[in-house]
Image (cartoon, rainbow, N blue to C red; front, side, top):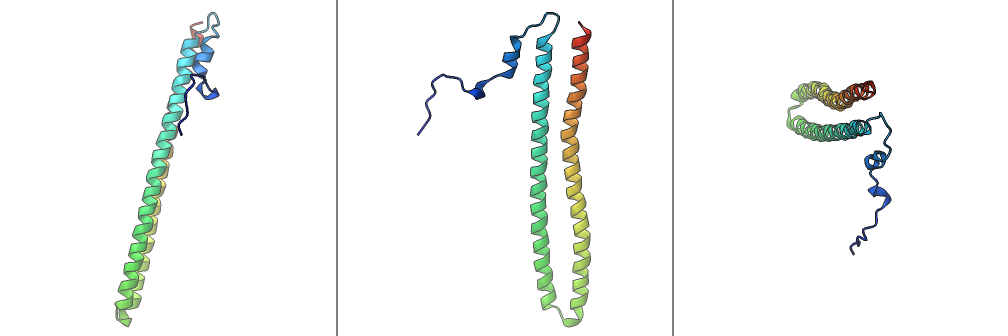
Length: 143
């Protein structure tokens, strides 16, 4: 079953920018304000996209780490179970040491990924805020 289009506009077809164009105030550059606001919306969308991509990569890496950890644990269990009794303690200690090191290395990597993603997304917003302030100064200084 497909929906027919009747040509009627829904509430979701509303264009905020076009609606504000009707309010022309003498001495006030509405086009410049609207262009600035359009850039703000674009910057917010870009920041959201960057955050989504970064968090997706983070989840993928966490999944890889979990898989690697499970595989290492199964291998260690297999190695310890077939080792001679006098070698078992040494193998268990080696596994504990390597697991401990891997845990901190993986934690740092994931932390760094999260920080990088956050910095990039916030950087996009910060750059846009700075540009928006400069644009506003120009619009209001011209009048």
